[in-house]
Image 1 (cartoon, protein in one colour):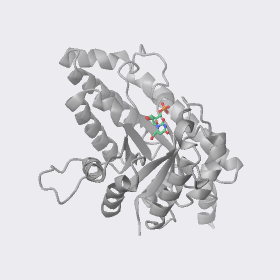
Image 2 (cartoon, protein in one colour):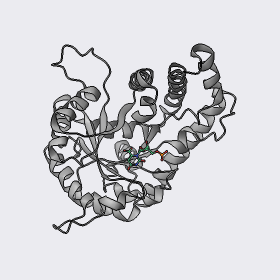
Image 3 (cartoon, rainbow, N blue to C red):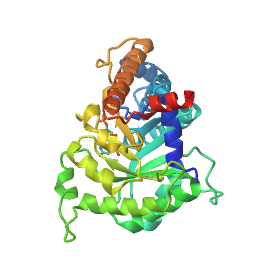
Image 4 (tube, rainbow, N blue to C red):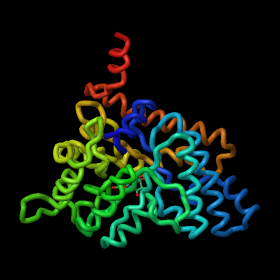
Length: 324
Ligand SMILES: O=C(O)c1cc(=O)[nH]c(=O)n1[C@@H]1O[C@H](COP(=O)(O)O)[C@@H](O)[C@H]1O
């Protein structure tokens, strides 16, 4: 049955891009003219900041929409500004979806069962709750599995019934991920390998038309040596690989995340794309758009070139085959 992973593959093929642009808008790094406008409307306040984040976020979305299939909104940067920030988050979710993009909420949720259920409802909705306005929902959510399987189940059940996607943290991109995630258990597996086994078990029951599950895994683009191992442990999961760009990940380091079919991985970058203009003094939206366009195209070319070298860039072959 067509599921979230099929939606991803369909759109990745259409855009010819495995790139995810992360929208992590930090008020100290967004161009000053957005702040000046926000201050003139709402003063230096949470409402003003949320307005600046909204306008900047729209610029990013409008710029990258032709080059990527997926955007990932980092909830934390919006939560900073309370209700105004959260409203901006959802306004940007709607905007991105209206522009034909798939939206991942990066919130790394996970709690005891009933609370996970509520988190799941807040991001995916619940048709049986008549008190909840039909607000927008996201297409997928990052979740933290460290409370155990009863914390994952509510997200899993909602994802299945509402045709959503999950990206479960398996091996995170940060240096300190080794502190806990690389520890070996009595089973001889590491903590992250154990989580990978869980992910694979959840994934097996929800395979879509292209052979992938709606249960995906987060594996840092920074852990080049581990990527192949995780690919083998979770053959049916789409990997979300953050850590490209600002954290050091490169195209040549992440090709093992892709299956021989040329799919199965989304590579995510935030700061290296959305702040690619470097200076907050940049004057016009046109200049910002040009910098972001160059950055996202370079990233896409870097990944596609690396895949081509490994014979994993499939759309050229598909285009040729369909001509015969
Ligand atoms: O789930 C994530 O997206 C995530 C997982 C991980 O292991 N490492 C990681 O950096 N992230 C997120 O990916 C984004 C990385 O941003 P950049 O380093 O600027 O590309 C941030 O929003 C992080 O919260």
